[in-house]
Image 1 (cartoon, rainbow, N blue to C red):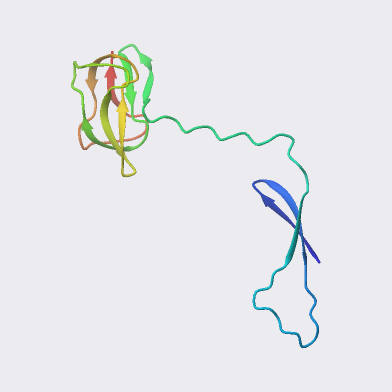
Image 2: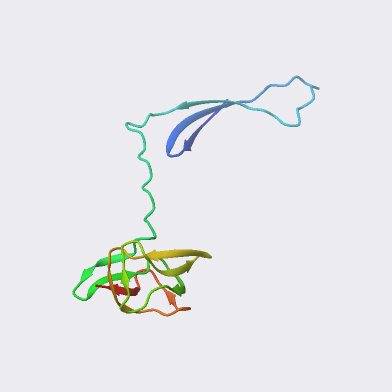
Length: 137
């Protein structure tokens, strides 16, 4: 008999494996099936917390500055299309541009209503996380 300590999802288990004894001249099976007996060594005090939801791609806004609301890139990518112009009125949730990241097209939407004050990117340009793309006031 051999004892092993195994961790599954961070929880320790003690595993005991018994070796099957065989008579002399007996044919050995081609796929041995060891008997495994598992028992938890200790139990967690509380259930594990559910993982937090990933951040929404549609809310790439930075805090307001003196010059308006800065819309920054939520992830690195390439600008495929700009759907607004400087001076355009936008409502919260309107699509401002399309950002391609990891071969997926992501709609970047206006976090709040206002007027597009400046566009700091061009179609085909690359952006990194946090790069300024638009300013809405």
